[in-house]
Image (cartoon, rainbow, N blue to C red; front, side, top):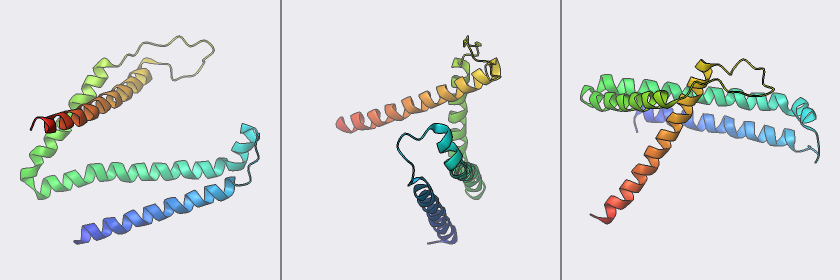
Length: 155
């Protein structure tokens, strides 16, 4: 096992251990909650614990994002022949996001009683792009699973 594998294994166990500790802390903090406690009381009692979970989720998301960007770049520079595959993958993702962007709608919604500042074309286009990207990726995943299963039958 090389050094990078050892480091990532240790990092994985550390992150998992922190997650388990946070889960135990949350379970202990919420163990005394009574049935029928109103939402405002629950938030005042457990809001800081929930904030801690959200910040931990942000940290994990940041680590995953950094790993998803940094490791392919490292592989591109250490194995230049493999760089073509990475660039093709990035191109495919860019095409999927572009298609999702084109399909996204930016029409301002008529929401009676809503006075917020997020009902603007830019935010709606961004949200639509994210949703359409998710839909396209789910469709591609299901399609590839079906293709794999069906192609094995005919081989």
